[in-house]
Length: 287
Image (cartoon, rainbow, N blue to C red):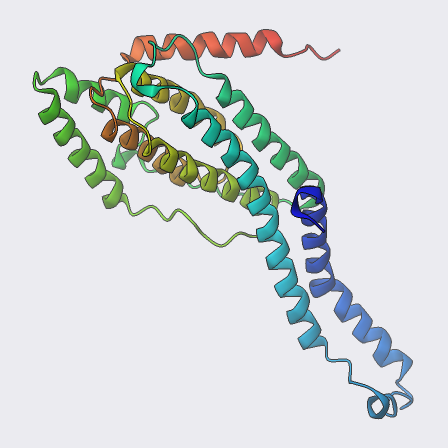
């Protein structure tokens, strides 16, 4: 079947079906065969055809399940990557106007992730609840990067010198933390959603590094990322890795900006509150 005609949810169903066959169905089939041929009638069947080898069949379905699960993740990630690429290649970032609100691409991005989350909830089981939070000792509060950016920039008159020191500081912090970003995807809702989010943020980071931003463009990225930070933590199990990747997006944007002076925290908070208020107004009230 052509890739564009395959429904992602079907691929996920087939992945879960393969897991079920491997973990449950094969053992039951083996028991039925053993019971049926318990009188010795099964001995002759091996002479007329290949023996039923449960281990080999389990390995086949295990491999198929992993391939199908990865294919589902790739399909969903590629779809979102198209959205991200369009967002970052369409505007002239060098002439970007001062940010007034969170960009609409954030809504589209979150809608795509909601679709992934919805499919995962319908098809996959829950995993073991384990939220990986970044330690406060690593300076990981949601606004720490923004505050550090502001402090470093406002305390120096030489923009280029300030940017250089800023990047050295935050890159050193990111490498020091040694956050494990990509781990093996498990057959559960949380793991699949988290993997898709991580891959999309990695794509976002790469698209940012291909652009050149003015101050306002950099501030728009800062605003969008700050809004995403809280929203994504609601749906992923690995908050530390998501924080890490979002920080890298900001650092990447500052590297590509000629004048990376961030928004003041009060302005940033106000714009985010305006966005949250709009969402609340648009949310239908359940009876």
